[in-house]
Image (tube, rainbow, N blue to C red; front, side):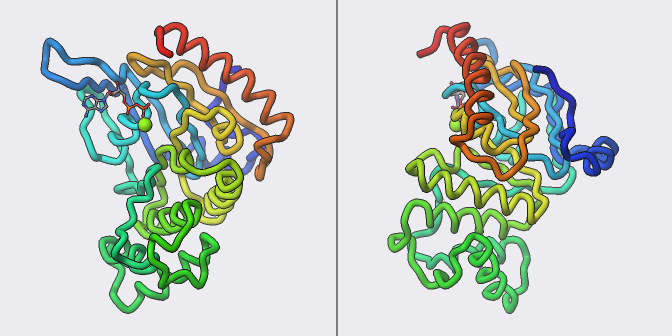
Length: 268
Ligand SMILES: Nc1ncnc2c1ncn2[C@@H]1O[C@H](COP(=O)(O)OP(=O)(O)O)[C@@H](O)[C@H]1O
Ligand SMILES: [Mg+2]
């Protein structure tokens, strides 16, 4: 299945988006690690635009360069060649490990991000409380990290990412360490928040079903080096259910391609 940039069942937005400049523009990006001569290419000529308001999943086997690409988009590292533009400014980030400060409460972790984002002191507490409400943790402002379950910690991490004030959210396997039911619930939450806040989401996963459950577009990366192998436009309505037949059918098709990529590169 080959694809256009925008979502056909999202008709009014399509016209806007086709004209709008991308929220993320990745152009001819190469990345190698190591010294010249012995450098290992990890990413090879990645060109990819993410439209404003799009939910894009970057899918690929472990070690194919997904985190490397996300780190480049986040500005944490520089490409060896090519360019990355995020016209709206520095994106917000969320990782598999919640990376909350254990000596701060849930609320204070969020306030710290608000402070770094330049939110005036007097507005920080009410805004942190609003963000906790948004991730359905109202009343947990004073809880410390050790008092929260894995799912609750990722909710706080989501609120903290939103406190960074960017409309572009980069997520690196944020739910990979959670049990299936908790992950399922958090898929609902991120879908809702993406829609409510009109975020642009670039979501990295090695989990095909998760990608099909969440994304408007799935981009499959090959391995060694990472290249864009194929992409799928997912026009199923949201919210979707991970166990639904249409998600399962498309997952089977995409898994075949992912397996093909893994076989081709002699991994696993
Ligand atoms: N800072 C680094 N120095 C050297 N090699 C790295 C570095 N970061 C990542 N790599 C290598 O790049 C490849 C891709 O890694 P990564 O982007 O983490 O993959 P993924 O997130 O898809 O699992 C791996 O082979 C990894 O060992
Ligand atoms: Mg990774």
